Length: 106
Image 1 (cartoon, rainbow, N blue to C red):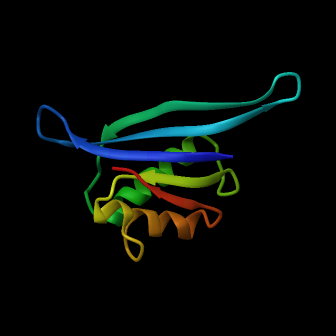
Image 2: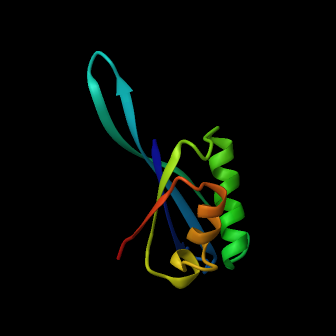
């Protein structure tokens, strides 16, 4: 099980960057469960609309070999393009990965 954590910010050249982190539970019989959070990628945003950002995030998840079954959560700031429940990134990803719960952070 994993949760994706995504945020965006401008770099020093004023280009919008997105960063993706993954929080997941590792199951090891000999030691029990361990919670991990790892930085995955930092890249220039293809575009700043919800569809473009969602597509870019889905590509990153695909590179990791994760499927919709593995992704059970999303975490964003409260920006409407990210967390809008009708047309934001979270709504588009929820369609792609239906097992998810959404958490807004501030």
